[in-house]
Image 1: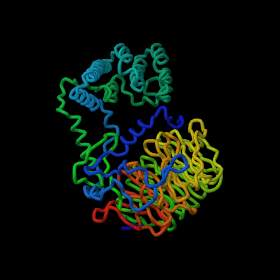
Image 2: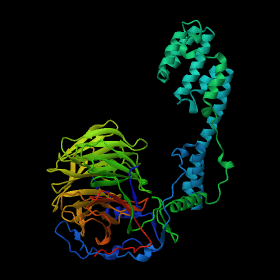
Image 3: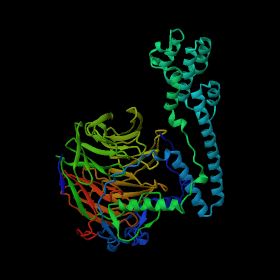
Image 4: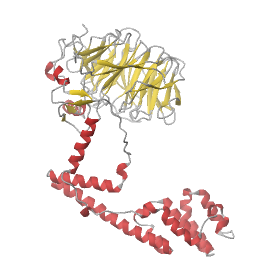
Length: 616
């Protein structure tokens, strides 16, 4: 299937603060959201492969034999069926729980759950705190009713007293409107001395709310009538009180619902969670034939499958495609960069080209999308990084950032979305603040070109790899290099940190990818079987479960390894040139790859084909 055009500051986590056992537990709890009824994950008892420990920090070297699939059975994948990616047409506002009634309902649900599970003390503490807030809300309700009556009656002494209480004291715009009405009525009654004193005491501190109105209020003290001032030309005297109450209707109609009047259905919280899980399963690309076992609520359900076939081929680039990335965690779009100097945006489901981003004067070496998918950064041989807004206007370049000369080979957007790191031929790692488009830090220490940059999962470190065969860790707060991995047999072509922050996969130009344990700060495993020796930037990264490693290869295939054993699980063939990168997306259950054959391909699990593909 094809388609045409159409900062931040602390060093690495110390072993003392994150022990080996606790980090392993964290990794296991976040690595997969479900376990199908038939085991799919590689078996940890498979050992370290047939290789022996090398002299490089006890690193276990796998033989690279293909195919060795310890712990993975073909029967495991027969329990899923492709259901397609269904569009989610209903988008719930992220502000939905700002509604006070929903927040109160949420507290009631938690209280009920704590009571059902026997957490009596916690339930009573939460109930007491909720009742305290309820009493505060009831007091506020009483103040609101009194304030409305006082405004309409013109009882300004009562208004003055209520303005210092409860919900009114912190609303400067409300106080400004109240004081303005009171001041203008004084002027209308020719009480100029009182009006002047009131202006100085009450309205002067609120001048920032509306400076122009304050000037006109000073003017009306000498004018013939209030309506002579431009800001008050339509003022209606005491009749304006009703408009004032109506203007602040939302605030004045503050309501409280007594918890004693709300009946919570039995096990309501658990029922809502079951509905949420059913929704996630329903909208997943692959539907399980048996009910999956849910192991964690910390992540959305994803249907883990091992891709075995090409799904779509995205055509449009006119030269080799050097890089590819998913736009956001949802992965609804794919972004790619090419030697044709363009960046293209694709629709994942159909393969349609949504837009072509032009502006670079040299080949695009790397692209990276923000986690929300609204922003794309591209690094180019023209020595610039371009930041693109891809929300609506696809060709809108927000800013152009520059290094100190030469190609820029890699770019990465910070997990927080406000900073970007990039590096290249000038041997320097640059950190820019995207809010001001200014340089925040420069990290100097590499002896040759910087070939790749990334952030750790905590966002406090920049990790960079270089042609000088080293990987360096830079503390963003201090700008210092806090650790260096050296002694590699080849140039570094990519680095990527695991979601748990405890592991790092590094691609070297010696036909190997290495796994580093960041708690012990040493390499622990080597992955072989692919080719990575020439001038190409072959990139490797973690799979959706963090138990797999995926990488491109110079012979034109995608390699997938079992992280525990180091053995090759799958080799996907379909490209007719060098595969530079293979990026996995958990939400879509797809791999996206880019190649020297001018195409981007997506890969999926086809249940009509064998699970494992032998390419011996």
